[in-house]
Image (cartoon, rainbow, N blue to C red; front, side):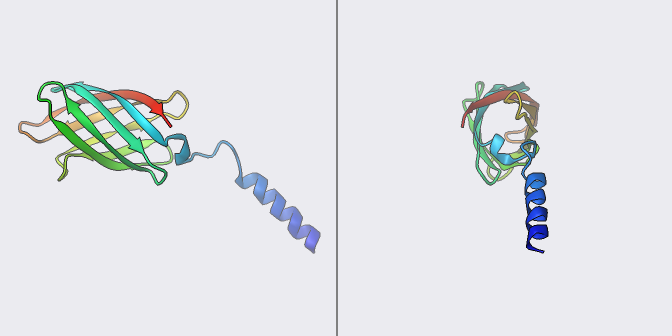
Amino acid sequence: MKKLFLLLLTAFLFIGCSKDDDTIYDFIGTWAGTYEGTEKGDWNIVVATDGKVTGTMHSDQTSENYYISGFLTDSGEITATIGSPADGEFRGNLNREDKKASGNWVNSVPTPDRSGTWKGEKTSK
């Protein structure tokens, strides 16, 4: 009985410990890049071990800084808000293979609404 239990336990360990499993750990660190559209500038975020995302967007045109806050899924999908309180969205995907990132942004403050795309890459762990 003990041998059967050990055999089953070993089999489950090999099945459950695949290196191909998606984990948040591939994304932990600093990511940075640029954004453009009705406004342009640069952005940076830090992905924490729990998937929490924090960072800033800096506008080249207004010299304003906007706070980014949100979460990242194990597959690399980022859903964040811009501003505090939330005045916009910062959404997209981080890629674990090539360490590139891209997405869309919208900011409602100050009016009128501004929007566009963003892209970047992982800069450090």
